[in-house]
Length: 386
Image (cartoon, rainbow, N blue to C red; front, side, top):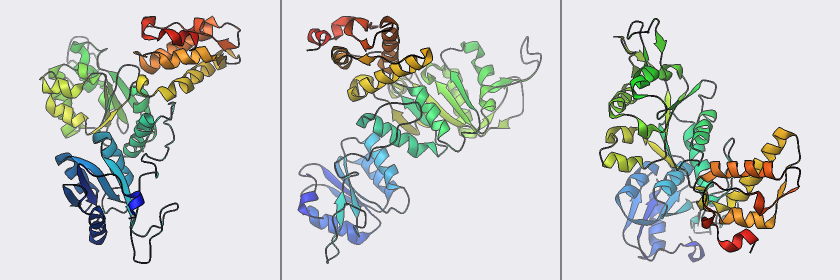
């Protein structure tokens, strides 16, 4: 590892993860006491466990791990420990673009793409945006999609949680099987159990025939629990039992049925905070958050605003079989400066209004932009394109 590619590690600790003891010793030698503490891990799982227990500034990660894919370790690290810099290690420097090993067998190191961020990942189905925040989301979704791990998708209203859930299903081996969506806030508490678990004939007045619940209806596929934070505590206990046993018992029945379902959940509130306050079962939270994915608000991915706006204009124009209008420079300035409290969904509505107001015009101007929230959130100069 040459000095030119050694990251700044003057403060904080360093973790070296490799099954190759010689490689670990070489990195330790090159660090030359620059940071404290320094620990070693023999694999990806060992590295993630040590990341949980210490304050680390940099993770030196071997590209060849005995247990996990290094891309998977990187995705989890960037999600849970965003301040930790990841440097990939290559003992033979055979990858293109990396520094060549010298005659002494010196190792080479590089950041995930040589610039400290991951190589660009293709957007998920039906999702637009290439910001670094969304790249992290795309990468995590593609890594976990092929597994049956339970995923908790967190994010403010309008950030695209259901789109992520549908992408997780579409990219999984379960894609040919059903995806059943349950809005936990939209079903009355008195009906939730029968909706989720089903009921046997005669279970209650009006139950003239047995009915499968939505969990069983998702057999072999995915169950998406939207707004899962709104589940009553009693129903949370029943859901936890299902997650632990993978069995359902219909209301009024005595027998249980095994169900093979991958559970996806979404919440627009701080579910961990609710669990800490006793407003949501902690054991259920940990089950649901086996693999958490957090969606950034639109205000934190501003480079995606205009591509999204143009996409919505194009979709609306296609529906009307017309040519999409372009955005004027002043309109772009306003869109980029707006607070977007309603996130991507609000942007979609603003573009729908603009496509109506522009009529047969070719350009969306500031006067065509009608926002859902007070205009005071827009800097005065932005409306005039300054």
